[in-house]
Image 1 (cartoon, rainbow, N blue to C red):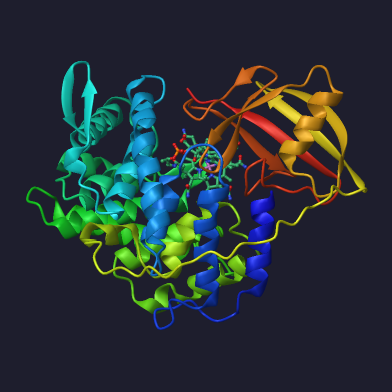
Image 2 (spheres, protein in one colour):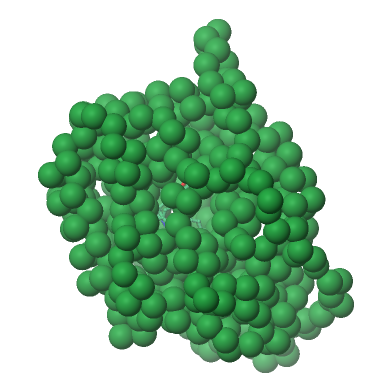
Length: 426
Ligand code: B12
């Protein structure tokens, strides 16, 4: 909470100048860059490879802090790999993100070994094998073990590390693009199209033999069109959280500046309105504001880097809970049955705080969360689980509109009804 207040104070002082190629180090960028760096100190729990990657893609650096964080990532990698070995938590996404983060610091990935059932192999070989498993799952079940976002991230990670991506693996992504299988819940996922665009562009740029160039080009054209068609009247592509990845993809695909300049401006406006207080959100937006994509790490040499980014100490600001109460109604829907609950909460509470108050007030309401890089993911209600690794999930909406943020970030400003629906898939 205090961290977010810091950010708000910093952003309030940020200028309204643009963050474009001519002036990449202007005050807004600088302020966002510092916020992300500060998040390394204030975050609790596991290190976040996405944050490291974004810091490495920035123009300004604090090499000591980045180096210390790299060490933290390296030591935590062991736990991630343990997770990825256990069958009930396929970890291709996390392993891929770690691989990208380590590459962004020019860490030699051929020196990282993993041992699986007595066999030793490099981390990259392990990731390549995981991608083969994902591909086999698509062949049999028409969907990856995880999701197409992680599948694409896996391709980006292998490809930016100079590893040849098997054409069967990239062809499955091409096919998914053609069949419009890149979804978030039931709706089209701009974030996933963006990641798929970066993945296929990287494959195209690496010019290994065996790639079906015509199909690759056609999928890239489709992705680009999808992204451009997803630009709304406010110039965000999808929503304000997918715009960073969408702009990164357009940059990677060689789009002219005119095709994404308005979206960069839209993100700057959102940043000034404190939309990117979650370090995970900021980590996907900042590279785009610097007009760089994840594919840039492929050619990183990590020499003669800037080392001028310093953090000034900030006075913590304490926020007292509001005296005003608002009524919150919660409908829990599972297998066609609805249960209703209500509780009064201080104005400005998060949905997570409201659910905690509901548990304290109501004997027959319980819930559970899982920690993720985006924050707490609602994983169980009244003992019914729908975890990240499951096919289904607890969908959160209000008045038939999906919440754009997680339960720990969404703030309740007026009396409101929430629907928590168990979306089951088989
Ligand atoms: C795939 C995905 C999902 C899947 C995840 C499970 C699966 N089997 O694939 C499903 C459909 C369940 C999902 C649900 C939601 N999602 Co979602 N999701 C994504 C997506 C496209 C990719 C995530 C991923 O695989 N990352 C890669 C790997 C390396 O990371 P990971 O740690 O393994 O990823 C896990 C977490 O990201 C977590 N997760 C996914 N979504 C969300 C959302 C929140 C708020 C939290 C805390 C965690 C979380 O599940 C992932 C899979 O294990 C991202 C896009 C993005 N830009 O990141 C959106 C994204 C993270 N989701 C988003 C949202 C809003 C939601 C929902 C809140 C929607 C809703 N109103 O119900 C719910 C979460 C509700 C809850 N129960 O808490 C937003 C978050 C914005 C924000 N500022 O918080 C994003 C950025 C999409 C967007 N552009 O709007 N999501």
